[in-house]
Structure formats: C-alpha cells, structure tokens
Image 1 (cartoon, helix red, strand yellow):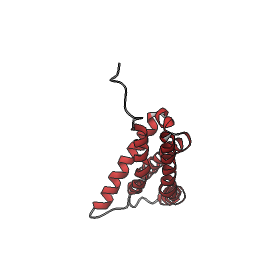
Image 2 (cartoon, helix red, strand yellow):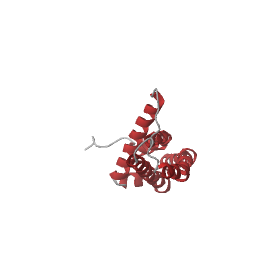
Image 3 (cartoon, one colour):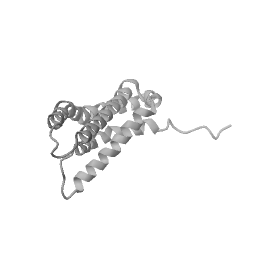
Image 4 (tube, rainbow, N blue to C red):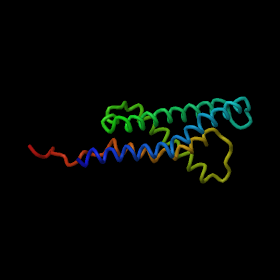
Length: 149
C-alpha cells in the first residue's frame, strides 16, 4: 500500500514544482520573451537573426518536451515515463545542459554581451522538475530477484 501512496505524493510534488517554477517561466517566455525578440529581430546591432531564431526554437523545444514529460507523469504516472520516446528525453537533456552552460557563463562572465542564448539560463529553474523526472524514470521498484533461480 505504501507504493501507490508514494507515487501519488511524488506526482503532487511534481505538480507543485511545475506550478511554482515552470508555469511562470513558460508564461514569461511565450508572452514576454518571444514578442521582445521578434521586435528586436530586425535590429542587427548585437547578434544575427539566425542566433535569435535558433535560441528561441531551442527554448521552445525544451519547453515542449519538458511539459510533455511533466504532464505524462502527473496524469499517467511512472509507467508513462518509461514508455515515452527517448526523443522527448533527449531534447529535454540537451536544453538542460545548454541552460546550465548559459547560466554558468552569465554568472562568471566579466562582461556580458546581449545575446538570445543568455535567455537559456532561465532554464536552470526547470532542473528541479527535470531531476525529479529523471529520478522517477530510473528508480528501481525494489530488490531485484534476478539472482534467484
């Protein structure tokens, strides 16, 4: 009986993580960052339009895959995480690594130039639910009986 209760607690905890960390940043990206980047897209004063578009598409792909993983676990549990395509995990992992790199760069740079890739650093807040989901995907179901004949 402890297993289903633990699974429900984990799902509720992920829901709270998503509501408190991911939802506000998703809102800011969709309703603030995309319009601002489209506004400045014609202004080539600090970077090429290709970099802006690439960074925007990377963030969008990360958001889509992250929310796909979150919603799958909240509504369908751990079994759904195990059946999802590895492509969702790959995209989320690549964007998580880029977010860490961007955050470290922005934190330790002596002089920070305006760049759309700096926006990837905000993805650092998505690492909490991402690590939670990784733990849920790779945790074992208890002791293995593979040694017994």
